Image (cartoon, rainbow, N blue to C red; front, side):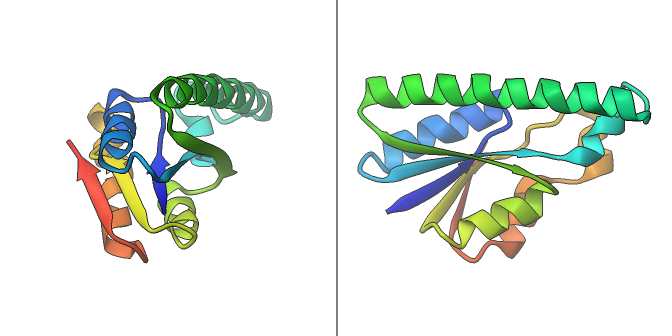
Length: 137
């Protein structure tokens, strides 16, 4: 069994990871981090250099997240795969779900105004996923 766990590094995504590890201990957890290029414009301006710096920071954050995930999985005796995609989160998550049996996702990752403006990724995944989805609060 393969369980997709989209993670953005938020507390909610870690709760989803922990839930998946507890609920599906014999599964391979496929941890997906989606880098959304639309986010490059928030907080740093829309110039090319700023976006490049933002993307580099996201790449580094992804590697740090995957390193933590691998350590936690190893200590718990859980099989884990890591996967990084660049694109719109809902689309990338639902595309990746096609190769899995289940999705376990945190109820939200963003906070404040960006959550309202950008919509709920978890809600859209529930609506569009080709496999069952568990939303962890």
